[in-house]
Image (tube, rainbow, N blue to C red; front, side):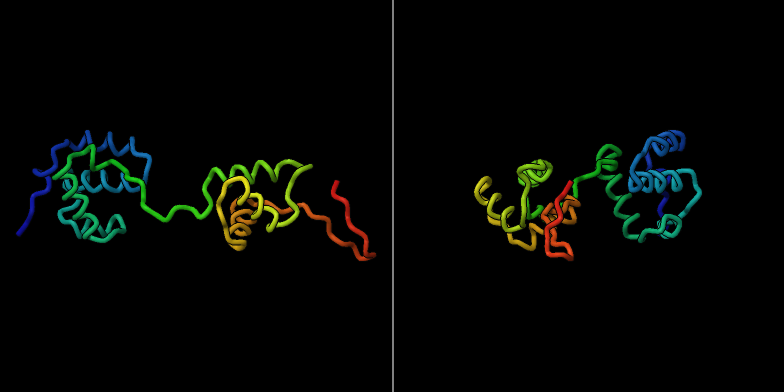
Length: 157
């Protein structure tokens, strides 16, 4: 059974072209491009559009179903992706970042940070999680004096 997509798409080719130029996200560009190609007759099938866009044909089918059921506004709405929340709340991260930026009252060890977070925010965080967040997410290093070869400590300037 051949489906005539040109009749199912309410917008004109010119409107779709204008919408295409206004899109900022890749996914919305692909969605509008799909509608444009089908409306203008550049593609005759979902499989052809999917191959051109580099997506699976079921994705294109899902887009067309969404467009026909919900309209163009809902079709272009980008929903936030669900995901696991961060182990350390952003409020705590900002507090740690502020404290690390202070030269006189910074932290000397990750255990000290762990204790500080527990006292100020009443949150228990594993050492490994805390280390990873500070070292790799904040790109911060603790300013602790290091031993030199002669056994003395190096003073930070």
